[in-house]
Image (tube, rainbow, N blue to C red; front, side, top):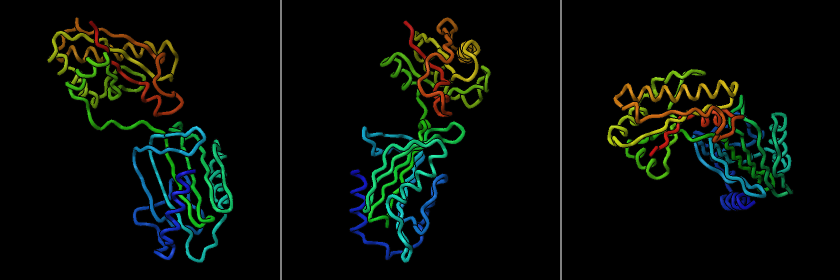
Amino acid sequence: MRRWVLFAACLVMVAGPAAAQEDEEGCKDHPLLSRMPGFYISGCGDQEFSTFDFDTPEGKTVEGRFWSMEFWIKEGAKAPGPLQIGRNYWNAMAPKGGTRIVETFDSTGGTLVASMPGLKGSGTIWVQVDVSNGGHAYALHVVQETAMRQDVELTAKDLADALATTGSVTLNNILFDTGKATIKPQSEPPLRIVVELLKAEPALKLEIQGHTDNIGGKDANQKLSKDRADSVRAFLVTNGVDAARLTTMGFGDAQPVADNKTDEGRAQNRRVVLVKKS
């Protein structure tokens, strides 16, 4: 409840509903959770990837797509009670498979924390509603779990350092045609970095390991993972690496690193791993 107390204190200090009654420039409602009637957005945040600490009994930190909005009742509008605000958001989430984790309200304010599945298998959506000033103001925080997009590519030196430190490197940016071992064109730049590494370190030997998600049968996934590892090996050999320095293994869906129930999790599980061999 710490965040709600601080939020309430700030609202009392600014005593600000006399200011503009329009939404703050650039702010808008969350695409799945609209505002309570009679409120305007006084502030907001919208980040492609961030983190938020939800006020659950055990404490829950969630990373992913992040939205934050602060709402204030418009002048002349009747403020709903804190419980009414919290229950409205919960009632919007419950039919969508929501789970209510925290609901603590009294006449002055309170907090709702709940989660619900994302659309079409996307990451779980976490919601926190902090109500203050007897329902005259509230904040909405939403995080949809997702993996961070990797925009900075590893260099040959980064690969060498990682292999020397941990003995392996995971490459999530090696993409293949769906259900096939055909390497997509956008995967060639990171593979050329691997070629650069192997040419710079002629004594280095690698095992190329393929992994899939759990879509499809286990035997088919095991074969697909091996075929994809073989495709990576073939690319490296074609680009000047001695075939004797490269071996391949396929593990299918036997070693997941994320939840196969979501698109993001399955994307993380479809990966190529390079392992340093002596």
